[in-house]
Length: 482
Image (cartoon, rainbow, N blue to C red; front, side, top):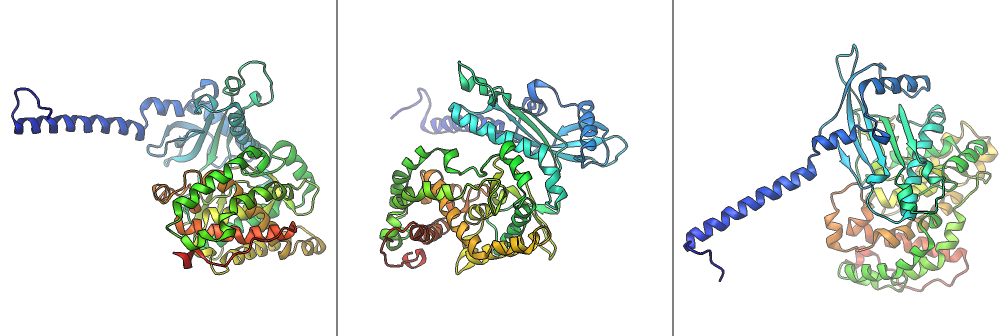
């Protein structure tokens, strides 16, 4: 046994306790430094692009210019002082953000703006392809606020105003012979956004009533650009020609090679939770079935600006990209943010991502999924009645909407099973259980298994469309199997 020389047993215990306390104190200091931003990090937050400091004179000039464009939400342009609101700082791998407190000349109460910064040089190491994809999405958001948000607001979409959108992504448009990743590290963006007031909240997963409100928000967003050829042509050139972060060609078809090994791990990890359900042939073969249909499904979901039912889709409509009213009332409105993946597409593709990702599975069971899609459809038609002649309204039936939804569900499921189920296990789900930004279907076992049941049903529909022989199976639900 190891023993400290010259120290008795009790003295030895005391010494070890002292050493342990010192270690705990050192670790506490270390992790406090990780959680609480330092003064230098605050200074870094208040640096603009290329090291320019964000000071009151500069911000006053920014607000004056924003007022001329109708993008100034504050009661005055004259800033006396500004500071980062302690506790609001977020240092993500891809971006930094915080709430800014502004004292305006002549105003007794402070006002607030949301700051988002993307500095490519601060991003973690990654391939040039992955870095290009991330920076392209940030440029997409900058362009949406610069070139599309005012028009969408004018058409009745509730959007927060952006007093400043400053970006330098010229690195995306120039080719070099040397190190492409190093060249891309020159890119960056600075975004100042109006803050949602205290009457709003962000939460996930959503209840049925909350989901009805979020879907009404999406319906309003989609109706604003529905079959507007001029707007959609502009969007296909300035934003993504096809919206969504999960689009197959954007992710790369090589990802499909991950389906089978990830799914094999999932089956092994969750076998004890639903043995009979997961043993069904149609469920065990989900990866194979998805791989066989993925390319065909993706091709059905790429409308051009000229095609019927095309619109602007949000592209990442998770619940944490929405602000819902704290108190639900009859005329409650929600807000939507984060337009990194916005582009031309079918609106129901947003719905097909939103429901499994952000809505509690209890709201989707017993016909709840189709009922919510029907509510979205009805809200969409009501909004379109203000803009479209009746023949165009009649052309988009609920059957058409449900058809596109089922295709889009399968398309999004491919992304889930290729990426978000990587390393899936009950323990991994539990570790993410209280992280609302993480999809509910990959942090909750029951929601995940219900998602697989939905996927099996929607895949059968796709297989019938393609004239494939359906996989024979005995229907066993996850609940029966538990």
